[in-house]
Image 1 (cartoon, helix red, strand yellow):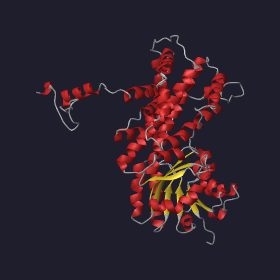
Image 2 (image 1 turned 180 degrees about the vertical axis):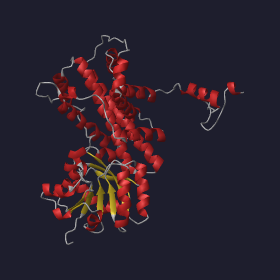
Image 3 (image 1 turned 45 degrees about the horizontal axis):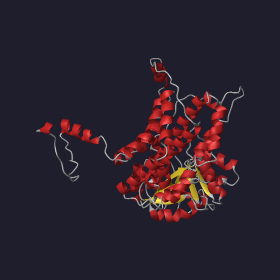
Image 4 (image 1 turned 90 degrees about the vertical axis):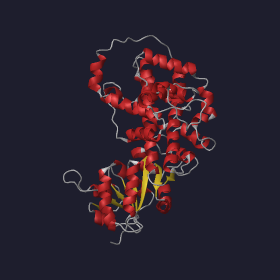
Length: 470
């Protein structure tokens, strides 16, 4: 075959097709592959190639072997497949077809330990492997995503220029693409990104419900408030799309959101993030609360059943929109603090040399987490590795106690659950408490399990037992 693709893309779903179009728009000749499933997936790659004239129909395949042979050596492939068995299955086949020095990039939301296992599997044949987190959704994949790279550094240097070309560019024109560490670092940081995203979405959902109560279910007034916040430090991609979503009405004049069943779904990355925080001992209460809020929402029939047994009544309380906005902003600072602190802890645990300023920079554009806050963090992390130590946060937080009290009291008085707002407040209180109640926990553990404890005036490696164990 005379024609050769400079890149091969596997999987022509929404993300794979969009990323392929992005590459093609930047002048790359692509080989496209999609599996054949009779009656479900037939000639998918060919149909895409025919739809857009910048693809070559002769480089659209259902045969994996023909696809591999159509790519220029050393071959560079990106897998855009669902996490799990689908990736393991195709890697088994590609391992046989590829040669020493070829590069495979997994662009899906894979679990980071799976990425490390797959890298070892392919290394047996000297095939290089990269785990690449992609943020930005369908639009980002098409117009310029945020790319989080982990794995083989040598392989990254080979593909760096091409990935920089198709990545989003920040306000200074720098590509939102960077090597973040060996092994599964790229997919790990994408996992944390998704955990932060879960909490950001839940915070907006809680603000939405508070505003709906405040404005007596007037969607237009709620939408106006959120739209006005875009002209402030609160601005971000998720705030903007939320305001846009609330502007849609059906032909009968009903707001579109009011017609959607209130059962939130998830694809698993939020659970991975929550579990990983527990494994490495990094508090991530906001992303965990957001995950559990989705689980609770999915129990619709039980919620209806239990609501009939509750005799709680609403109590009058007051709140200002200024107070709500301030608390929302501070919750976002705390959410980001937990996420970045988790990355910091993971880097020490897994021996990655990831710069937090770099992570913030590549999330500042093309990412679902794009916001004015993220732009600020890209600079602030050059001076401090902890958001809670940043002067801007401290000054705002120290003047906010009345605002927190008003939001919490208003929500409680109106029977509005606020898991992420509450988690933010409780985390701040716990992290600024020099003496906690954990001494009693240690005494309890020693009483029933003889686990021991340390006295206040002793070194941490000392171990003592209480009088109850004598």
